[in-house]
Amino acid sequence: MADAEEKSKDKDDLKWFGEGFDGFPKRLPDDTVEYVVFVIDPKSSEAQIRERLRSIESAADALSKNLLKDYIWQREPFDLQLKREDGCWLLRGTTNYGDSVADEWLIVYLLRELSKQFPEAWIRLYDTDGEFLLVEAANVLPKWLNPEIAENRVWLNQAKLRIIPLEEEKRPLTVQEAREFIKSSPSKLVHSPLIEEEAFYRIRNYPAEISQTLHHSLVTIPRRLAFLLRRNTAYISPAVEAFYLRDPISLRPLKKEDGSALKFPPKDLVTVSVRFTKVGFAQLKSQQFAGPKIWEAELAGLKPGQERDRLEMGMKLACGFDMLLADPQNQDKRTVREIQLLLEDVDAGEEELPTDDAIAKWDSKEDGEEWMDINYEEFEKELQGKGTQGFGDKAAQANLQKMVQRFESFLNDGDAGADGAEMDDMDVDDDDDDSDISSDEEDKAASFDEEEFSKMMREMMGMPEEVYKETTTAELSSDDEDAWGEDEEKEFRRNMEAMEAELRQSGALDLDPKTKEGNAGKARAVEDEDVEEIQRSDDDEEEEVDVDYNLVKNMLDAFKAQGGMAGPAGNMMRAMGLNMPRDEPED
Image (cartoon, rainbow, N blue to C red; front, side):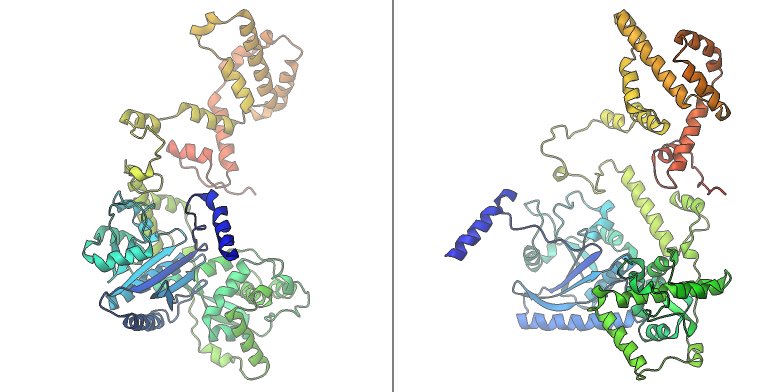
């Protein structure tokens, strides 16, 4: 009885979230994809379904071994596990792909291949953003298929993307409702080749492009580390991530001057070809890193060049392994335990390190690093579809061109909403009665906004907001001058004179940088002289002023202050058809 009362009390405590609140919705961690495989066959018993799922699980393992023999996962591999949930047998897997989006799309490819082998398999895929396959195809989705109702409507079956159509209610489906619909009305499922082509565009050239996510590089590392990587290349991903995400705790073993805490000191060095993921190689290569003194001493003896570059990469990699093994939070990880056991076997003499003769027989493959270089002028041309040389690899170029095409289609789509998909009545706020916008209003909204332009210009030129407001509120047209009283006119003139004096004193009206000091002294004289006489004496000078000089100078200063990032100056210049060059550092 007491337990029932306690449950009732807990339920009452949640009512302020809304009637029927059952807790916050489940959300996947960032950079995570989840996949579920069901066998939907009305004629099969539960035991038969379980047996079929085991066959799919075995086929998934075989497919991974066949296609991914040399593949390196960024964080977690593709993995399906047999589970029983809500009275139903299924296969479920979750993979954290980190910074490597290629891992997520590889999983999509593997599941699509599995669906070809098992027609009774129905597969769900979703990530942190939800139905990411629909996000890929957002430009060609029907109006009714929006994010509010898309959950559990998208399924992969027989290598096809199948969508559960909208019935009476506009709402998302539960997994149970979706399975019942597939079981009872499979002929009503929607299959659109156009949506499917867009959704699977990134894997159009798989499996040939799988190997293009890897990068081989010659690096100089301790022989012990070469032994580990030869035993299992996948060890490199957690080590690179440990280096890339290093913190003060993981850096502790690197701070001892004698290097006694290092498991991979710069001794017995060998140069070998190491296989990285492209993401991992870029993370290692791009970071500036002051290594332990024992490593820095080794580097100091080499002149800049290929030999030094290989040793520097080897230092970063070795330090990454030292951080991985020393960090207390990694001690329970399977990879760390395996590495520690292998090192113990080496120290005990149970495992032998590779000899120079053995290493000489290893593959010495080294890939070019051109894919890391971006020519910004060529990049601009690629965005405009005018590129000739390209940059990066072919897959990156194709994906960029596809992205630009989608963006242009979105801009040209009059029915497109803020989320990229077409809007329907579910995307419109029920409280807004002005949902129908006329073409005149639409043109007005898209036209040049003089007030907004003035605001941006004022921000770039450094005019204080209060000065601008004070000036604009005092200004009146010639038609209204008669309505002014004598006091108002005097007040307006005083405000204008005070603002002019302030601008002159700050040098904002100075066109010649060499005369700033003279103008500043002249501005100070305004406080002691008659203002009207100063204005008369300056009339001829101001007639010769080219006001565009200050405008251009301030816009260039604002563009330089952006430091290569997006900002109002760059956006305005681009809108006027001016592509500014990158600002080179001063000597």
